[in-house]
Image 1 (cartoon, protein in one colour):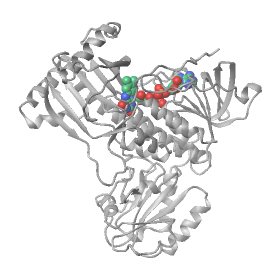
Image 2 (cartoon, protein in one colour):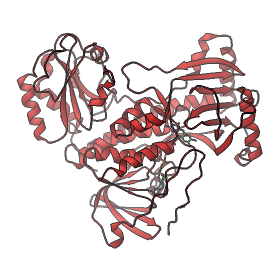
Image 3 (cartoon, rainbow, N blue to C red):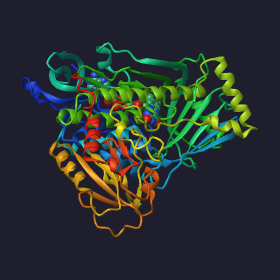
Image 4 (tube, rainbow, N blue to C red):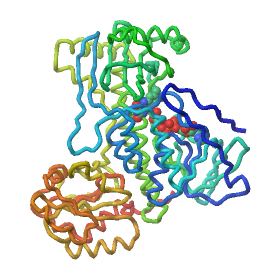
Length: 582
Ligand SMILES: Cc1cc2nc3c(=O)[nH]c(=O)nc-3n(C[C@H](O)[C@H](O)[C@H](O)COP(=O)(O)OP(=O)(O)OC[C@H]3O[C@@H](n4cnc5c(N)ncnc54)[C@H](O)[C@@H]3O)c2cc1C
């Protein structure tokens, strides 16, 4: 029988809550078949459940443990993650607790050789990066789930097996503190983490690299009078040839990551005397020697950059660390997983609601595997710089470091390639024939739609929800009749779709555009600049529920016909190439 610990994890800063195990209805006899069961309540499973609920899709979330994650995991979240968290209703909690930042500093032998500034344009509601311990993020998601009757989060429920039934569903075996049961579901989302039992049971293999360099991760509580910025020390005097990273976290916590000399065993490195001596040496080096500190957590980490080649295996869909393992340099793991969940949620919901083709799930895999492969490639570069895997790489890295002391031109090589949203430029959901001209200013199909500042505490993304949108730029008081007719027809299909009319500068007093669900005023021309809208004539973008564009009409207003809008939507719903049933 599965017996998860019911003793609250110890932490210097996080007040762990032990959730009760509640015996499920399936224990009394075979239960109803569920539409979605999510295995694993890490950040990605929790966020995906919340995202699905926005489309009215109920889910059961099975989690082995009775508490959120123990110890030190993700601490840096990107702007794109914040935009996704805004959609699922937890961004405000993250903003209230987290520490925003935008500068990264690289030091070589005690001298600062590069200072990176992550841009923060006025059009973005969220800063480029925010530090928050993963426990808090999971806790905020759990609190949001507790307010959502569509999500049945079952603590203490350990999945031990899976059987695919031929008739379009899967059966999971679940072990709990009061014995086992089986649960049937049309779809299973595997967010059971890097060691995914489901991935192993289905015999699926990841592709990619594992790197040899090992890091100790130590979280300490200490009062340091330093701003929230990333600090990277290459070849510091106390750890010659190796790398050390420091990050401030909320609650006066600091993460210190230091690379171990080659050949040092993890057990040796985790001896308390060794940890203490090295943390003291690091504090000494930054001028904080003698400042009292307490140790909260320590572990050893080594980087892997790997992905499954396909994220859908019959009725099981993989997301997050279960689908890919990414090095922590560049803050990619959870940030990439949140984009998986956001891409998957609308597609699975549209398939289940009968609004889109099952082929949408193929495109989930195509788009997100392509994203992971790009990230694996980029993460490989960062990892080879942080922990050179061979003599040649070390030589190259050290040459860059030593040249950077004298020469400005080498310094940008330190850029640490932070996680960013993937552009689905070759997605089969894009409707290329709707593209006015590929060379016209503006966004390519598949690009992430940029946020836009509309006024004090008012941004474009605040107006978006679980829906397709037509961003329609027009100076006219009403949408053309043919377009209004097409919208009425589309509405009959029942899926969420809205027209957002954007009225150019100088038309502020214009009444709401007739036929549009929302009218936004582009008073400062910011919308026009970001989306490449020309001052005259109507132009438009079709935007998917995950805020990626999928079609555009930028150059010729006459092309925004009812037929071309319907064709673009047909394509975005995965219907253009014939349904392939899974
Ligand atoms: C030291 C460290 C630092 C990191 N820093 C960052 C960072 O700054 N930014 C970033 O984006 N990422 C970072 N990451 C990566 C990040 O922590 C992971 O990418 C993230 O936790 C993945 O979330 P997940 O939900 O996919 O999986 P997990 O968080 O691993 O969650 C999986 C869940 O599934 C449950 N589970 C497992 N098996 C079963 C089963 N059989 N039945 C039921 N439940 C099960 C587990 O108990 C767990 O709750 C870091 C990772 C480490 C180790």
